[in-house]
Image (tube, rainbow, N blue to C red; front, side):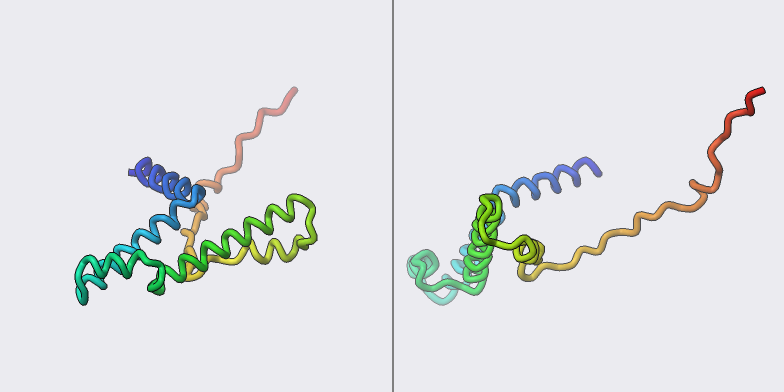
Length: 128
């Protein structure tokens, strides 16, 4: 069970690092737009309005904004690496901001029971 969870976490991290999360989010947005628009119009009209770029939904706008923010951060990182005029403090402030709509992570308490630490380590016998 633990191995499967680790594999899922590694897969999610790899997808995020490769930028595939934007593709997954955009596909989800297009699917929702297509379904909601096909209820009030024909499928052909729903396809046209979904993929013409003139009628974005709120999720599409949020994805576009997120991509632009990520690209801006990447450009600022490249500028910092090249010795540009971006101050280190500004870079840290930009790179530490959580994504829009992020939920804080509540980590479990990793303290160990005191019984494990109660015994003193064994001491060697005195040399005589």
